[in-house]
Image 1 (cartoon, rainbow, N blue to C red):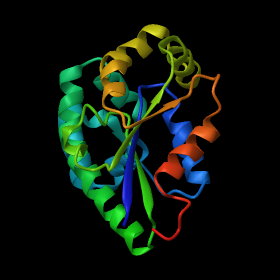
Image 2 (cartoon, rainbow, N blue to C red):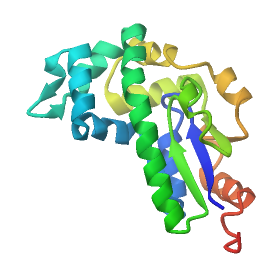
Image 3 (cartoon, helix red, strand yellow):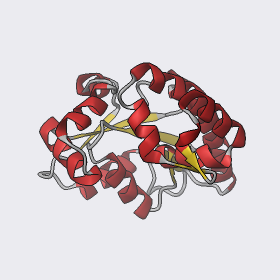
Length: 202
């Protein structure tokens, strides 16, 4: 039987690092944020719908200009919601196809990485287990400022578009602490052990 973990966390939480650890341990991971960006260009219908909504300038030679799109949607929650309405159903269809392929490969566990799982009711039927990666807010802000080269107020604008840490933690089946104090690898091993990943008889 194939189990599905959804791994989520606020911006700068260390979620992407954690799922890459799981991937190195042999778990297939679907990176929904990355895949959505690929679908912007691969799915012509989606590209047309986004251009109508956001303007033709978000594409150049058929490629998404991520910085232009980000500047439009991260300062406008209404526009962001409209983009999500277009994108999320297509990501879910793509994920289902990917998961079915993993099932054919007889994988026993897969991970869906999603930054906005709790904000996306469409995804709530996906997981058997919800994992939240958590880190202190100030550390998260610092990480994103360094990673994206943007000022603090821009980071906090993006954080305000996501649900609160309290909401995420209250909906978690399992919490990973990526606070720089507790090692991530033992937590990953514990999670996979509890999911039966190392028991190849399941």
